Amino acid sequence: MYNREDILAALRTVKYPGKQDIVTIGMVSDKDITVNGKKIFITLHFDKEKDPFEASIKKTCVAAIETMIDPAAEIRGNITVQTPFKELKVEEKPLPKVKNIIAVASGKGGVGKSTVSSNLAIALAQAGKKVGLLDADIYGPSVPTMFDTKEEKPFVEVIDGKNRILPIDKYGVKMLSIGYFVDPNDALIWRGAMATGAIKQLLTEADWGELDYFVVDLPPGTSDIHLTLVQTIDVTGAIIVTTPQEVALADARKGINMFQNDKINVPIFGIIENMAWFTPEELPDNKYYIFGKDGGKELAAQQNVPLLGQVPIVQSIREGGDNGKPVALDRESIIGKAFAELADNVIKKGL
Image (tube, rainbow, N blue to C red; front, side, top):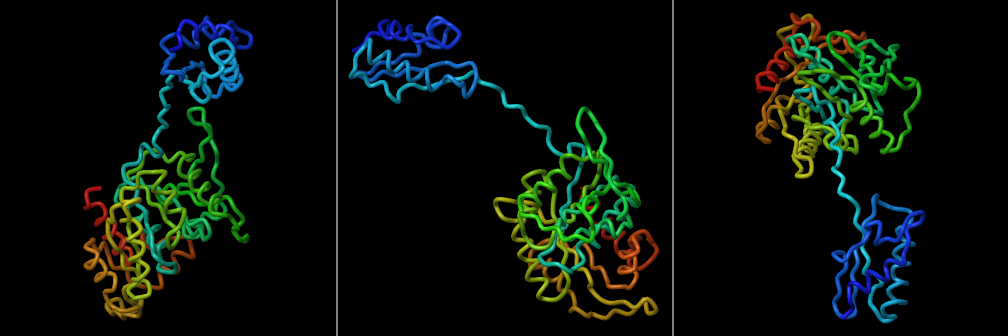
């Protein structure tokens, strides 16, 4: 059995560069030495992690033990390092002043998800709520067109010592989109990491302020951006947009399953059936079920989630989106009433 005092004496020959020996400066004491037969275990205490002299000092300690104690002593691999415990800095939760974060998603493209997101945001604002809208569809941003803000360029302002992007404010909705930062005529060819990085920046480096509702218009399908969203912020719930025909409903089911996956576990607030029927402007009481009838309603029943609303096709929806004046602005129109009812249904959920 080796003597601890002899081991300490050997370690006194090991110098920390620019200082005294490691015993004198408190890097090791008798409490840090354990002996078990020929095995010697030593704990060295460094002031910081990844000390540049760590490897050389451990090597010198091994040489000192083998030279001064016993060449057969089992010391190699038995020297560990400890550094002072540092309390991890807890980063501020993104969007700390936002009460409800609603992800608007769809299983496939072309079902009117961006139209629903934009008009829902406006309808919520018209109901007296503070609303933000993030266009997270990196490869097909629609918000700048739908709000007629294509020429707008968000400013950056220093707030609390940090650069913050100031969202564009129109119709009572604060909004950001990658479309404000790229040439609309250029194809955006980004790998997944670049796209998700851009979303994180719009989420965490913008001055969204106090909001009752933060609506996120997600890209169609299931992708890295969906995962980035739920990993970056606490999503209150998701709304699934579909049209009545089976091809859309099949993909909507995938969207629902994605949010209900154990790794994501985001509640489904409900389903919105878009393009539920066609109503000609000159025949407001007529309904023509072009894409089938009640497909979204039936899906909601099958999935045991609420049907938040059925939105018809009318010409004014397309015109409003193209002209930058979403139809929800006219609360007295057929479609304006539909989105007002949709907003009321969201609010009634107690959010």
